Length: 251
Image 1: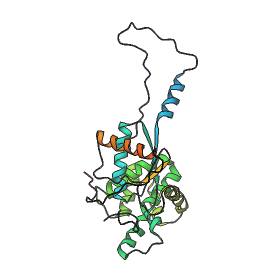
Image 2 (image 1 turned 30 degrees about the horizontal axis):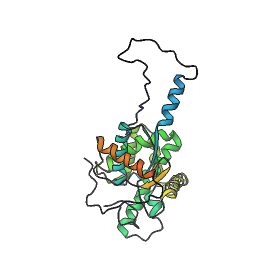
Image 3 (image 1 turned 60 degrees about the vertical axis):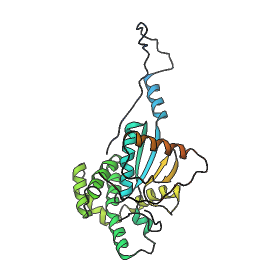
Image 4 (image 1 turned 30 degrees about the vertical axis):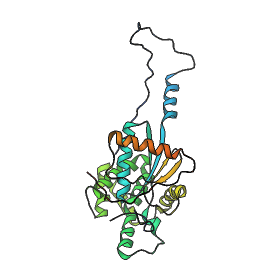
């Protein structure tokens, strides 16, 4: 089943620190200790590295298989490009709450509140650093694991990440919905309401997608990223689209 906004007919922590190494030694010359200029310090080098790093933000709902594919691709991009990803939540339940849905899809959306509420609750209590590990744990169970008992998904994921089991109760309460809606609104405001999840923002320019299966690896992943950077930097670019003929491939 496609997990996307019904209005549309369509639908790991692999963090790394590349850093920079500023070499002075020429292999063809005698080694001589260089004189460091007064205005250049290791802190300057680190700051330059941070400035050169590209930023991307991804909004996801943990129940969406297409967002899962995109997140696996971005993890590969982090390995191959000097990119830092910020992981943020959105909610298909929020997106669809005022839409006329068939009974089966409405039930799916009602259940979709749980996992994303728990991620928000965990982040508010333990900080944003828990968002990605908890998403990885939930998504692994929901998508390749094909677990349908979302309460069990939540319990097992909290245990895996080392978070208190009591946070699971947030799945069935509205306590953290205001924070969830703020994050959702921030992502949707960049792309409009006629899309679903995932949303990515590349250097502040946001798009729905990319929707891709299976998640590209190696140079294929890097080339797709380079293309996203290219279109994000093109004034007036809005959309590329074609009909999907494959379901999400998790292997």
